[in-house]
Image (cartoon, rainbow, N blue to C red):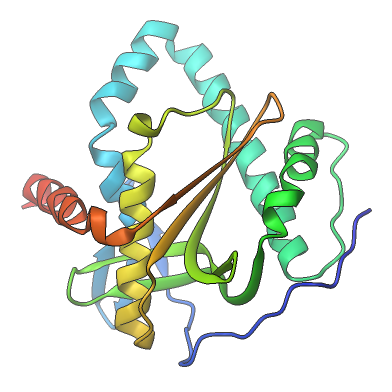
Length: 226
């Protein structure tokens, strides 16, 4: 068991409420931001550009092996997220003996997690009427003293920056949503990736550099559902 009471939660300046969501058979995830008003999730939008490469990968490794790998990665990531959330809430973190890898990744990442404080949001729904998108952000808090969108990832191998453009675009979307909902600008996005070899990668970016790219992601996605 690990418990720690060091993180301060300050909360957003305006209430952020949970909203209904649904995932279609096609994989399209929608959030009901108002009565009968649904916006696609930013995760669905950013995943759209990787659709072809994922199909090619599944064909290359075989459907059975691809499903096995994807299921294991999802389980690892979900458990890791759950442990991080408990840790940042100053709650007792329970280690799952059936998923020792997630425990190892969490333990490896604690030094970087300790750079977070003054938490505004954890695992919270956001949306933008201007961009007509929605999503659930991992964390909005200060990272090294600067308010940031913080995303937690796990990976089998270290990621090259050119492979994770979609992460930065997604985090930029959350920065836009938070500013629209609460009026507070966010000038830094942070990606923390816990890798199975014990490496912890931290990418810090300025969301202004990815706003135009975000718009192109949205435009590309919307053109496929008209």
